[in-house]
Length: 188
Image (tube, rainbow, N blue to C red; front, top):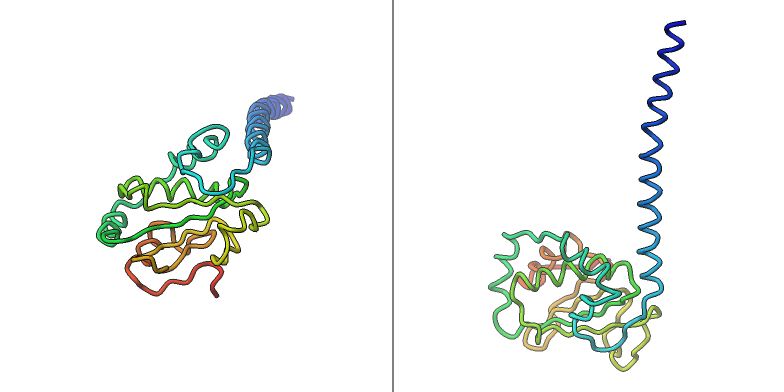
C-alpha cells in the first residue's frame, strides 16, 4: 500500500510540474504566431528605401531582434576592413515580406555598422513577393531570391550573396571582397 501511495504521489508531482511547462510553451507559441502574423500583415515596402526604415514599426519587431542577436566575428571584421578601401559599394535587394530577409538583413546591417561602412555607399531596393516590382529597379539584375547583396568595386560587380550565405555573412563578404572564388547558394 505504501508503494502505491508513493507511486500516486510521484505521478501527481510530475503531472503538476509538466502543466506549467506546457502552458508556458503554448504561450510562447501564441506569441510567436502573433509576431509571424504581424509580418504577414505588414505593408510591403517597395523601391529605394533608406535602411533606417526597418528600425521603425512595424518592421522593427524582426529587424531589432535580429540586429541585437547577431554577433559578427571580430577577427573576420578586422580582415574585411582593408578590402573596403577605395570605391566599394553595395546594392541590396530585399523584401519586407521575406523570412530570409528578416533572418539575414539585420546581421548584415550590423556588420556594416561595425565596419563603419558609409551609408551613402549602400543602396537598398525593396521589392514585392513576385520579385517583379518595381520593374524599372530590377531590370538587368537577375534577382531570383532575396535578399540578394551585390558587391561592386569601381562600379563593376565583384560577386553577390543570394538569399543565404555559404558560411556566414561576414566570411562570405570577406571571400568576395578579397576576390577569392565564391559561388552563391544558387550558382551550382
